[in-house]
Length: 350
Image (cartoon, rainbow, N blue to C red; front, side, top):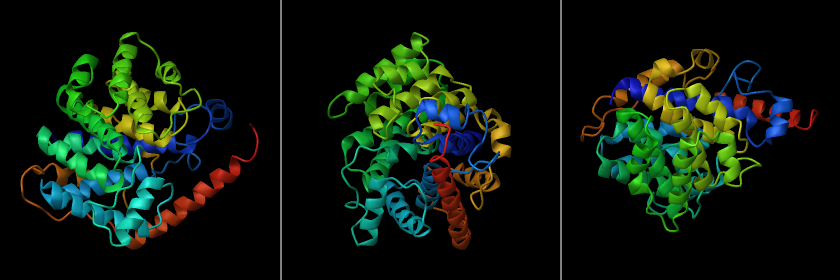
């Protein structure tokens, strides 16, 4: 594991999130008519911004640095950061994460704050855990506490572990062998109903048949868009990764083209492929038009450098921070742009 793999995961999350964000919730037909293909940033003219997918991934990174490899310290740090993150009024936060964070503010412990939901919130922030933590039991413990902090449905944890293990494999062995990736995901496939196992087996079979990600999504009954249900999100994102194992642009465009929860599916796909290819594999035109502050590209580089310093050992350090006032101003501006997008969607073309 190197700083380049970590940075590839962080930046891959950010560019995937930013490319997918303007398309979120649109049908395929409406997205094509209103925005055109997802070949560039479109959130603010030719510029892009990130949503809660990237923000929560950054919270995970900061908490990993602070915890020094201890999963319970990681849980406490992530819970504290989620509480303060909510005060910054982030737009687009998932309902389960919102409820869980409010419960934290109401005095619930981090072990009891989660709500029963199989949403994709834990999955969208778990790829970085797979990149940073080399020991699989330690990785599973960190995924467990991260998932249960907000989502208590075992399926949410199972999907989050699948994403983390896929990123773990991508960092160390690449994504060129779908069967090898599926084998590496075995610890995540012992779910309560076997649905994720079946869907991921279909994922690998789909890749072997050279089926497009769009057609694969249709085969799962997702012709109207990929939902926020984790057993839909994870297989579709992973199918795009295995179809485009070294092409982050192709993977992100493939999942965005499926419609639905496009910022999260694209963030997950970007994170996994980004972990495999590193910073050099991130589309530079997408990075150059990403206008984020205070969590800028430069800040993410500093974060990756700090994370690379043996996070698996019990040596906690001070995380790379961001100014609270700056985050609040940024989020107010972000919410304004989201409102403009909402109003624009009321107008033709339909």
